[in-house]
Image (cartoon, rainbow over all chains, first blue to last red; front, top):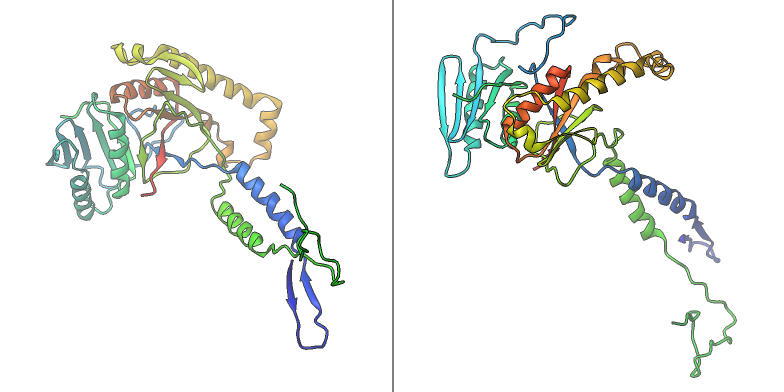
Length: 157
Length: 187
């Protein structure tokens, strides 16, 4: 037991702190937390106003996003990326066998700096590519300030 | 192995009783309480009130992402390498979906429409009405459109065309919101 010794007087009274209830409480608490713990970090990526989303009749027309007249599109292709913003086009070729994701980040940052209010974009992915590329592309766009992402049914140009 | 009481012993290993004062063995519990406190604080910090919304399947590796949102309860469609499932019930085989030219997956569409119908019927039952009455109007748990929310749990290595077919079918079946399940990447 934890104890405090007081040597001031002749006889030393031992002041004992009773730790048993604390240990009981801790044991129950830890057991409960361990049983109910969720270890997996599963989350989700949300689609914006997707081209897939079905418009219902009772749904009111949403106002267009800012700078809707300057569309942003990111194509993920077999040989790299193509970024279209308004009338401008940028190509980012693969670095060896890998897609140049850092190059895409730099380009998206530059677009965000030029059009700070823009928060929407469209992503197209080659049908033969892995689904993981869609998620990585969407994740990259969201991280760089384009939260409202749509997925296009069209093939990249 | 025998357990001996602590204390001094004679040459025959018998306890000495001559001293008169009893030996008091004190067990120091302070270190144990310290450790318990640290573990309890760690577990409380990582505690999640939402629980496990979807069950992870080792056969379906999910992609990783940084900019994620908290998973909400929804109808789960699993696209694995060999099958397409709706809430653990197989509705189509992966090869069949991959090979077909039509983007509509009939089995998935029918099963999902039935699921949405069941959820709508559930709202008209007494427990559903009580739940609606108890929930705050307009709260996230009281919106009928939430019944049409779908989470796609797809293998990260499958081709995007198959995912597109699944998404198109979900939309045609009446899904109001499609989300993709991902593993949160903390790096």
